[in-house]
Length: 176
View 1 (tube, rainbow, N blue to C red):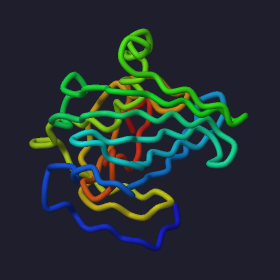
View 2 (cartoon, rainbow, N blue to C red; view 1 turned 120 degrees about the vertical axis):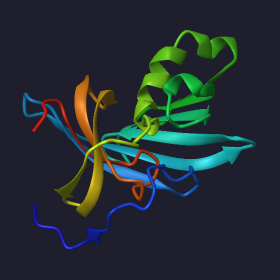
View 3 (cartoon, helix red, strand yellow; view 1 turned 180 degrees about the horizontal axis):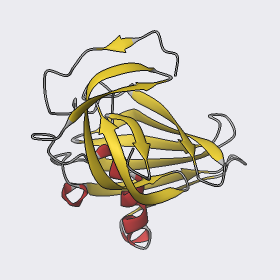
C-alpha cells in the first residue's frame, strides 16, 4: 500500500474522547469480493451522550443510522447506554426511535456501535500497519468480535489511539 502520511507510535493506550466533528471512513471487503464503504461520524451531543452516524454505502446514497449513545468507559460495549436511534433510508424517509420503540432493536443497534469500544490495550503487541490513510507505527493488535457493514465475525484488529472514534486502522477476519 503506497502511503505518504506517517503516524508516530502512540503515547497512550487510551482512545481519544468522542467529539463532535470526528469521522472515519473504512472500506469493508468480504471474502466473496463484495466491497462497501462504512463511515462513522460524531454529529451532535446531548448532555453526556453523542449522536453517532453510521453510514453504509456512499455518503449521499447509503443508509444512515444515527445512534444516541452514552458511551461509558469505551472499553466495554456493555457499559454503553443507547438512548435513541434515527434511521435515514436512501429514499429520504427518516424514523426516530426512543423508549419502548427502541427496545426491539436495541441489541442490534448496540452491535453496530461495537467498534467504538476497545478492550484495554495495555500488554497488547504493537505493530506497524500501512493502509491507504497512511503508515501507522505501534498499532495495538488484538482479537475481537467485529461487526462492520455486512462483516460479522471474529477478527484481528489493529487500533491506534490517534484514529478518531474507533481507533480502527485495519481488521481482518483471519490472523496475518
